[in-house]
Length: 67
Image (cartoon, rainbow, N blue to C red):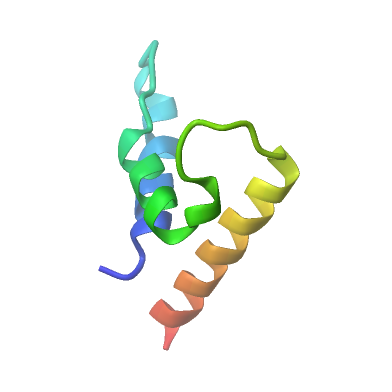
């Protein structure tokens, strides 16, 4: 599936309404590691740069899915 990042992000967002005390985004992180290798590992990165890359990647996925 080519929309993995968007799907995993959607799972995180949908879990907010399920009264979970802890959300572990391991599947999302795994996809981020494969799709955006500059964010591989647990090193500190700029949050604005991260969100920019994630939103851009999800936008690309949505555009591909719409075709």
